Amino acid sequence: MSTPSLSRSLPGAPPAPPVRIVHVGVGNFARSHQAWYTWHAPDSAEWGIAGFTGRRPGAAQALAPQDGLYTLITRAADGDRFELIGSLAEVHPAADHEVYLGHLAAATTALVTVTVTEAGYLLGPDGHLRSTDQVTSDLDGLRADPRRPVDTLPAKLLAGLLVRRAAGAGAVTIISCDNLPHNGGVAQTVVTELAERVDASMVGWIRAHVDFASSMVDRITPATTDADRQLVAGHEHYHDAAPVATEPFSEWVIAGRFRAGRPAWEQVGVRIVDDVAPYEQRKLTLLNGSHSLLAYAGSIRGHSSIDEAIADETCRGWVEQFWNEAQPHLVLTGAQVSDYREALLQRFANPRIRHQLSQIAPDGSTKIPVRILPTARAERAAGRVPTGCATVLAAWMLHLRGHGAPVNDAGAEPFRDAAAASDLREAVGGVLDRLDPELGGDAALVGAVVEQATALAPR
View (cartoon, rainbow, N blue to C red):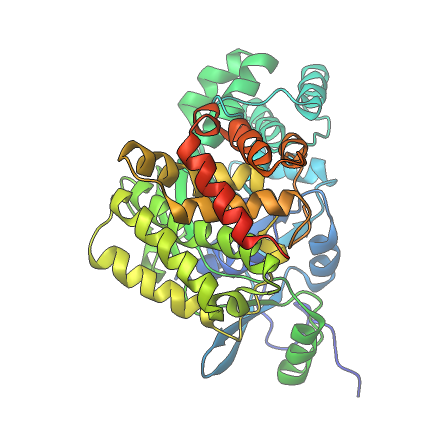
């Protein structure tokens, strides 16, 4: 007998809950994290999610025939656990723009959650919305027709808010779940600045009706493999085109208002706080910063996954060195940091979570400034030369020169041009100067990065 495909028509499959959340950027992480928390909430039957992909429609193509259902594989040390997640009531490609607008126009929609990676917010180094060709095109399109399809996240959010205002649908909360400091404030900035240029009257409406919540999210979630699909088919006896494998650890900290309501997330471990910044800083620095270090330095040393890289004593030493530099500058202290560091080492070493370095390496031009530079600046202000930070910067510069994981970064061009200089010191100075002219002019830091790059470069 052939293996049936997963769908809500299978015996015992849960019905789709009514849509009250719209998610932009549906992918593996969103499904292992926000959708998982929502499914576990005691009122999950009232909180369905309509998910929309980014540029690639693959997730929608796999999940739509399954009515949004998928299997979560939790890879613990003692074996795999399988769970059917039913919170995704609908999954659409980004091209289904009218469907997206319809959900934003509905008064029943209370939340919009976002996972598009740091680069998707198009925030410039000056803290404002970047004026790219895509932004200009979206700006012209929204001025001409608010329902016209758009490409960028700021325009997509604004388009939804424009139709929401027209429909009189009331308050809504937008929750950023990307690895950006003050991510709710970033979302508010780029949406409001675009609104000023499209329809200035929207700015006041947004202030009165839209809350931008910040959140810190944490759960290591690798890309799905054919082996994952085969494992689910053998264990669950149905074909799932899009299972998700993840680690047992998960954390979500949110600061924001929810005037239109939200699931009872706090009853399933979500921490609702007044200020997410201390947790955000700890995670961005210790987890994401060391992930960048391992992605670049580990791949240069021939490793392909996080567990391989952290098992390399040299890589682990670099991670510990970077953490030692960063720890004095964190808001959280004591066991809140030491316990987190120990947990990270255990998480990284989990051989059952094959988190590929090539999956972590993209968009370094956006990630390095928020993951590494705060510690580098703080250490230099304290009169110290941060060797750990220099190691990350050196590894990224070598990555830009073609070593280790392949470059996949829309903002990489000016950094690659600088890194291509034949003289190593000139290359390092040029890369740092494009990150921050003050760092590029710091002879001691440049020298430390050159030294680490010389030591790390393949012979």
